[in-house]
Length: 345
Image 1 (cartoon, rainbow, N blue to C red):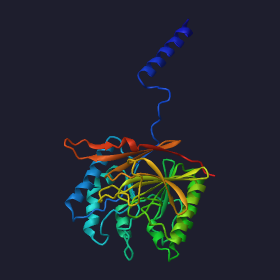
Image 2: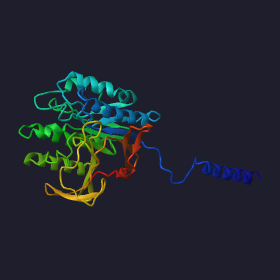
Image 3: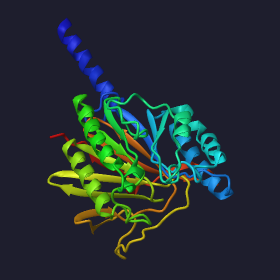
Image 4: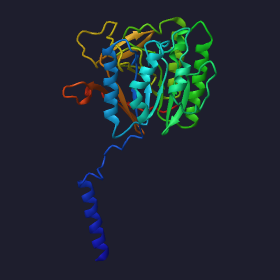
């Protein structure tokens, strides 16, 4: 009888736990890692409206995370408007201070941070504390890094290098990327994500940015490396909107997520999109011989929240809520999506 009573009590305890929501079959496990991604704040002192737009995004990120901080914040570039003006860098540092305090904050350089003939390395060294790279980059590629955090692999690229097709630097970066992805694979990092400023595919004012013969070849090589090493997604900025692009490569999906809405003046699509489609809907376009699927972009200030689990990544898009009354942020529910984590060859 004692054994029967014990089994009965255990059964009642199990039912109670299920009823209380502590043991619900099929309940999603908490994310292994959460990160915030933003891009194109272009901080400066020349426009009060612009400063407010940046402040609204940062405030929304702070209130979204103050009770559950992310493990990483990654900026996809164009941190400042004028790389030569120290006031812009100080403005960036001041406005983004709450994010630096809540998490490890990293960034890649954009075209405004690193135009020809200038170097923002001293500011990057001062502002950011980068993790040790699993594949140290050559001295000529000081902004390239690859590291592992919470089992996930992160690659930071300098997309401005690819505009220098007349030099040996793009090939050096491709060679480094190949070695970095292999090193992440040896550490069984999953998922692996790339972060860069200029998106490989886009619809905005910079949609021809990869159209040159040499730059197209480097893009194709990068895509092949992503396929070989099962990169889950490329996060970029440059276009001041939110949008996505994807390309099927023999069963592997090359995914690009464009997030350029952290405060800069917004962009709309510069190429013709079907009149009967709303923001977020898919359509197909030929780009450099590739049939690429794009979403109609949304021109809104925003940031991304990326939750990484074992089999997929969930991406949410948040827009600042400026009120009144201020709710601090709103999710663009129509743009929530998941990215399956691919397996390497």
